[in-house]
Amino acid sequence: MASEPEILDELRRLRARVPQLTGALAAGVDGLVLAHDTPGVEPEVVAALTAAALGVAVRMADTTGQGDFRELLVRGRYGYVATYAAGESAVLTLLAQDRVNVGRLHLEGRRAGARIGELVDALEAKAREARTAPAKPPARTPANAKAPVRTPAKTPTVRTRSARGPATTNARTTTES
Image (cartoon, rainbow, N blue to C red):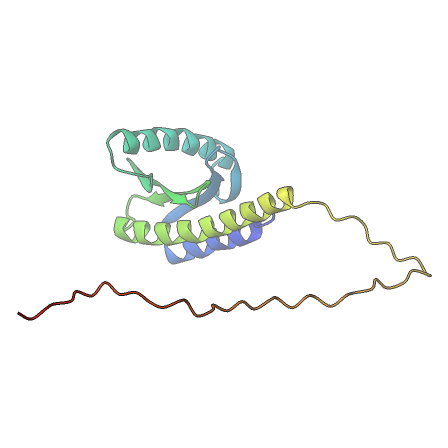
């Protein structure tokens, strides 16, 4: 992925801001790894499990009328796994020690998720644009080719309103008696 270095930089900055993080991973909602900083953990497995958990979380939020998915927090004996929405097609999963400040984890996770989402969404928009843009024919410039003759553009006709006929009013008239 073209923006992998930017995403990886964001993951590393996040880990520097929250020292209790033991790993950070950005993945597509389909479970494919976009970027990771997860020493000692298989990123492909975490991304696949994140996609599965995301499916359940999205369904749970929808079924209970809580709106679009925002985040998911799992607490285990040794720490936390937090997953945050990152734009339209990505998620951010963080691994943290049990002693992490959960409020700080949420604050930084939400911010990083928003930034990663912007990067991924912008990249996908460019890719969509490239797929839908018509291909340009190769430019030909033979040695004896003449420059195209350009005619000046027509000036637009300015239309003005003409005065209307006598105006009629719907005024009431009163008579004195």
